[in-house]
Length: 173
Image (tube, rainbow, N blue to C red; front, side, top):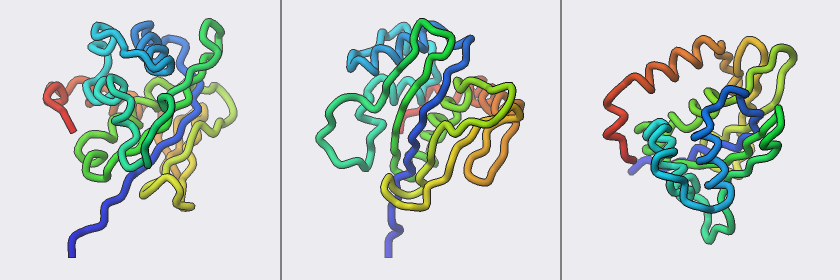
């Protein structure tokens, strides 16, 4: 009997880092406004992230269509507390084949609190409406994905290894 597919789902409301690249903000702004991002701005992003943000319908794999508006919203632009709201889902094979870089990127661009903890999202390992969702929390020491704590150093090191790996330039799900 063939395996059953699942559709890992992520839903985030993330305060953004204050040192975020302007090109990244322009891409997010374009997607939130349902405009195609500039190619030059997309080229500054990791290929996996650029693939999803270059065509936001790719972030809704396994979702029932028809869509009205992109799953991206920005608030607080021009203030000291910009915030990104973003949702995406992937087929489990796509997630395992590199799509996981998308949630790592979210952790990379997330603001890092100096004290306390903030709930920034949820992860549904198998489908959007399953009740086995895990929380994603960030704190001064790092993010916690469900029951798995990371340090910010681990996030940075993992992100650097992904960015420095030239094989990602050929990635296409």
